[in-house]
Structure formats: structure tokens, C-alpha cells
Image (tube, rainbow, N blue to C red; front, side):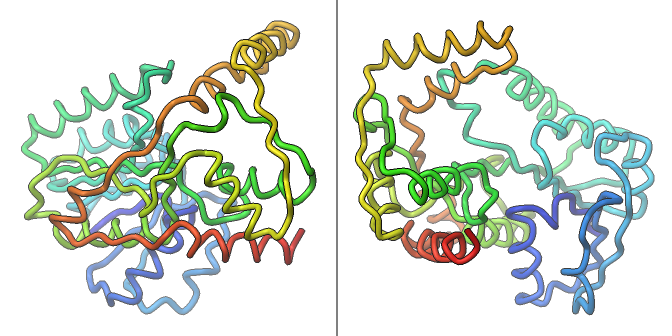
Length: 295
């Protein structure tokens, strides 16, 4: 039996649809919160068992893992170490899939906890001879609340001006939640024969921020003027906000990352597992139409 967390989330929902499409026939135990809307599972063709609790509760997770030999942790990456603490106390677990992020490759990523915890997680899993893989998606998009591409779309729909730094030359390679879900499936069904312990999952298109912005404004059908702000001025502004808010509002790292290349190739998973994402505009067009309809 496999235990899955985050199956009602941004990438979890389309992954559930893929499992249904592929007629996955193993029993699935799904962790949900008390406040989670589980209507997507009504009349499910899959063999599902829902357990209600919090993945940060190690005792709950130990009980949830009883009878399971595989864990697929899609929920918040910063909770992976707590899920693994429960795995540590569950000797029957043989396989683990963890969804992390390409943020660990960032020069400006200030929070070292994730990197350090992943090192500890690897050691734990290797000591117990558990087969594992980290999935590292790039910027995930696909819902009006993804806090990534949807933020830009919402701005472009409202305002005629948009500030950019360093002329928006930093490269990115966002991945649709639907393409990511397909990658989940490829990794799950091939888990016992994988050659790697981590796979980068990115979108098809590598583009600059400014190129992406222009694609989005074209899809929206609106002209937006992009105003380049010198990095020094932008940096001084976010620092001022940081100190004036008594260190409660901190955009410093976000500003740094806006000037950093965040495009990562998915050639390994493409070559080994046949991963083939759609062009950016394929899913962006659908998202823009949804947001325009419900604005």
C-alpha cells in the first residue's frame, strides 16, 4: 500500500486524475486535513482510504504508515523531515518519493534548513536501504492561486505598468502542474528501476522573465509597459521596507532571485522516463482564460 500526502493540492489534484486515467490498482492511503475538501474523491475508481490528520504530527504519521510500504510526499517540502521521522520509526517502508524544489540550487537561497535536512534524509534512507527519489520541480503554475504565474497575470489584468529589474533578462523555465503530475506518474511506475536519486522537472520552454511577461500580456490581450528599475534602487527600496516594517516584510531574497537564472533542464527524466512537457503557452492560455472569466 502507498501513502500519499498532498493529493488535494496544486500538483496533487492532477496527479490523482492521472492515477485514475492509468487505473492504478494498488491501495492508496491519502492524508487529508480536517478542513480539506475531499469531494474530488467522491465515487473514485481507485482503492482509496482517507486518514485525517497533520503531516507534522509524527505520532499521527506513524499510525498512518501502518501497513504501507511506499510513501509519496507531495505536501509542503519543509515538512519532509517530519514525515521522515515517522518513516524512521516504520521499518516496513521500502520506497520513498519526496517532492522538493530546484530552489536548493539557488545562490540566493538563504534558508539552509532544507538543504541540510535533505542531507540527513538521504543518510537515513540509505542506512535503511530504502529506495528513494527527490523530485525537483521548477516554478509551478496552473491555478489562480499558485502564487507564481497567477500573481503576474492578476497584475497585468489590473495595471498598465509593471516594474522589472535588470531588464527582465533572468531565465526561467516554469512547469505546469499538469506536466508535473505526469512526471509523478512516470517516477512512481518506474520507481524500482530508476537510475537517479533526484530528477529535475521543468517546463518545455526556457525564456527570460520579460519574454514570459510579454507572452502573458499577449494572451490577456492587453498592452503593458515594462519599466526597468536599476537594481541598486530596487534593492534600497526593499531594504527600506524591511526596516520600516520592523523586519516583518522581507522581499530581499525575492528581489535577488528575480535577477537569477532559474531555468533547469529536464533532459535526464526526458531521456530515462520519456517525460515530455507541453509548451508554456499551452497551459498558460487556459489559466489566463480561467482568471479572466472569474476576475
